[in-house]
Length: 254
Image 1 (tube, rainbow, N blue to C red):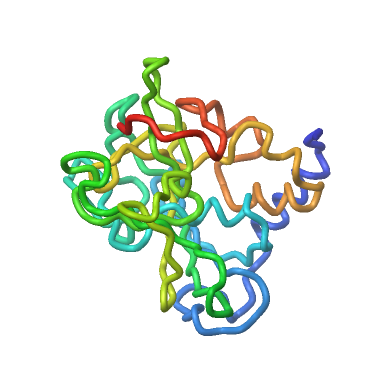
Image 2: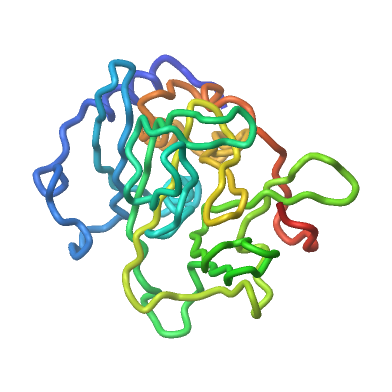
């Protein structure tokens, strides 16, 4: 897909368009019934100021994955010690496995509601304490559809990033549909990296190589408008580690 100047103009328009009164800062959003998923972003600008915005997301996995990795309460390793994901602020230094402390640039969050009908599809994955080894995770870890975990196979020294829901075994890693609304989060750095969440090695946000191929002109502009530091798909940079396809067999977890 070619990123044209007109698409960049559309991105700029979406970023500067004022929010409707119902979605401005400080307004409760979880109980309203408007169509579309409401998401919130926090971003640190070059001058150190923090910008907050709210967005209405289309029901597309590429959009929701940017806001749905870690459930509220997940402890993220920082230079200040473990911090609950909902308490993170742009600018705090997150401990990465590739480059050491790295300033947190962007935080996305959304609320996941239960399936509309009983027996509907499970939306979250719970990894029980110690399911993948001692202290991995340190406590039960709840993740959303956007979460990936680092995996080290016997045939290669490097890590591979695997969707957490691919680990579901019905025993120590289970799929659940929560009885009530769950707040989910994802975070992004200047460069893609792996970090530690509740003792497990997980990735920061990256939409994946070639993600734009599945979006039309307007959808791409709407997606890029979620990230003030991104002007074109290439600005996301490369992945810190390769990603595996869904459905590959379990191997040793990092």
